[in-house]
Image 1: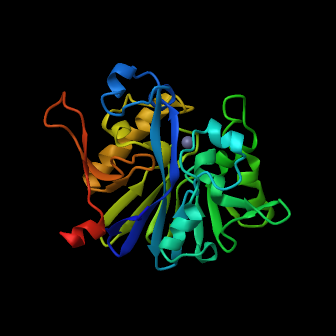
Image 2 (image 1 turned 45 degrees about the vertical axis):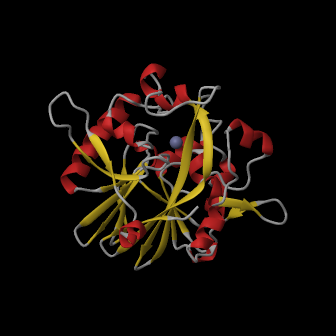
Length: 295
Ligand SMILES: [Zn+2]
């Protein structure tokens, strides 16, 4: 895929694809009846919808930052089928398209440690041991997210896989935060609980412009337009609603560029309230920097 590139002040920000996967519509939309959500996304005959899996590359003065790493290359065939992968993971090839080798990545930020967000953190070496894929990068994750991932329960153990994060600690590459943190002068993380207890979004601020990579705080634009539309996957759905309420008000005031990790139809946009009290908030798509140049 050609990367989707956006200019945020002095930073260039790219969405690159690690593939796409089919997931159950009921999982994606929770309590929302299919009669409502199928008007927005058409399911296949097995009630599954196609989700994109974008990772984000931020070019900064301190070097390239990679946000999330997709499913990675370690999944056995059976798991790939369970997860509904329709395209093989391709993150390394997509990075090469930007002229980046794995060793060029300076920082890796995981929004959270679900398998589709951190599987590419590690790869198997020639002896079959999981080792950091980005050998010179420091990886950032929230301390509470790491604790939840390291000690999963019956509901979370099918997405928290230790081989995706424990080898980073063994290699001395993992740095944990407890709360919001500034990574570089232009990039910070903000804890946004709900999808998981310590999910974090990534905020890019440069020359008065703002962008936010939302991860699973709102993987699809419609999740931010309609607060009650919360995936069944979220561990704290009522907290998700409050997180989204404050995120979108802040994003509207800042005229922030919103980057939606799973939304192939609307990967980037800006949000504003509806015209009247009963109207939905709306996300308006934003064109990529390259398509602006072509106009
Ligand atoms: Zn997730």
